[in-house]
Image (cartoon, rainbow, N blue to C red; front, side, top):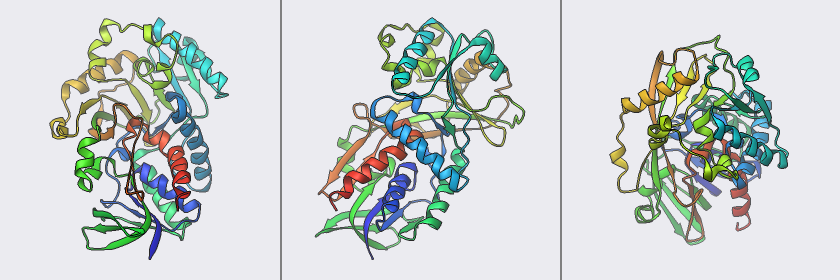
Length: 384
């Protein structure tokens, strides 16, 4: 069978490319190397927060929110709409809150300033000594990262007769042959399509090693933690704190951002790219994190597979400064890895006009993939 699109990668970026292509009626084959996605798509907070983004990625996130709601209305993908809140702890962070609110007001994106008392009324486990003010986004959602993508795959398989999804199919060959692209898996199977979209994270180095070496992509390693179940904990929604305000690109677009100062007690945390977020899962556990370490294409192995305990300790100490619940009662810790580019917000490269590499969107995947893939498929279909 000749496909219109073969999508390589079963993570969230590849899956939404497959979803949008299938919605438009194309014959689509999606290939995933493992029995199920195992990388960044399932190793994150599950926070869908367009409020953290600016420019086109804010628009992608906003579009994605609409599609998430449409999907959730048809099937349970684990989505909950409890909003996002950014909690400011000092004068600089408060200034950025007010400035970013003005930006979002101009974009007609609903948000509400909360006083310290209002924050404590909604989230009584936040320490009064930490909170100055907060900005709340009621329309934003969260999902369960260890459930969402698997449920989405099942939904798509049942809904789209024009979509084939195959797992345990590592791709070892991808080359243009005449007017088609030939794709080969380790199983010996071979498929052809008019176009291939490669969304396998940093794995395209196996297919195009020289291109990968020259790409400038870096790998980011995160460390995250999960508490034991705390089902009665009043901490619903996406909880983002002062270090997040100092990190996210929507705040970096504010007029005062270049002038803010880093307090002494935050220097070590910023050095390791730490910002503290909390997301209570459906089972009552709370995801806490995260940190950021970076390595270039020739140094990925230097990141290691283990967690650095001193980074977990830095995060736990800061978390204890913010909340009063027992964050050290952990059920698990883990590392996540994703590719990103230091100079591009996404790595896009076309090989022979028919193989389209779309990867390295960094930490924007859960929020931005859906809207970005919608546009990406629209642009590529014009060449079919």
